[in-house]
Image 1: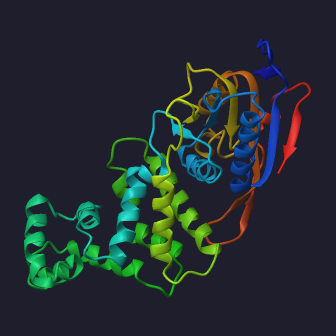
Image 2: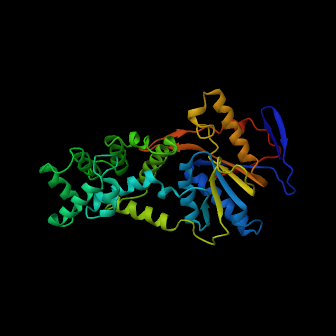
Image 3: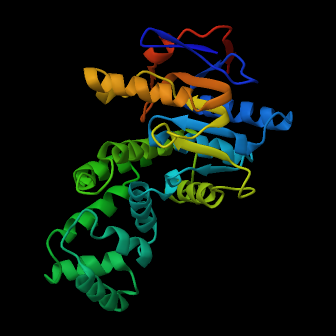
Length: 341
């Protein structure tokens, strides 16, 4: 393999080294399917075990579509130094809102979200609500409404009631309801107060909304909220299937530093993802993005695959054209193979 970094050529020295492969797919979903298919083939041919393979990405929300395809195709995996998409705090918050919107008796979901964002409802107030709920058949939404009427709860609790009503508005799609919820409750402002990467959390919420929109396009549903939640639970419960030792490693490029694998896939090699759109016009940061891409390349000991998608589906229909990463365009690779899906 021969790569160019900042005008210099770098030659791979692996004994079994072969020219890299560029996988081109139409959409992100088909890109994930393509990667999963190639992995399956490599293992079925006896060339590698699942443990020999890593899939790297620049932004964490990309793990969602990979996890989905791996589960469907029976590929065991582990999210390295991280948690699965549906286990992330911000995703679990939105799912809890959805669960409570169809089941106001769900105290677990209620206790998670009634003070998210903060509404002045602490442990003491939560116990009061729990104790009073027996007067209203353990319907926590009705309990909050009645306690608000009597002035027994902070006025901000009214925002919680309004949030649930938004999710129950069947005149608009579920994805639109969730986007409206996020906006109305100021959820992004709330995320800024939490530890961790603020932008990463926002991207996870945006990916969840896209996932819901994609689910809605997949068919007609009697109860779209319930059926989406059942679908999400199935994916979560299937997480990390298979032998504890023999799994594909899924991780970010940052996490991959210092690790090596016989086979590496760099997923989502699209301008705006790598380099990340926030850093494209910042000189010192674009250099850091380039170094990060180089880190991914050098994780591969024997086989290297780049994958990208030509179109990005927008949340409420339509599509956006994607350019292959400028970093990949700037890499000279001898004898490169192309797979098109």
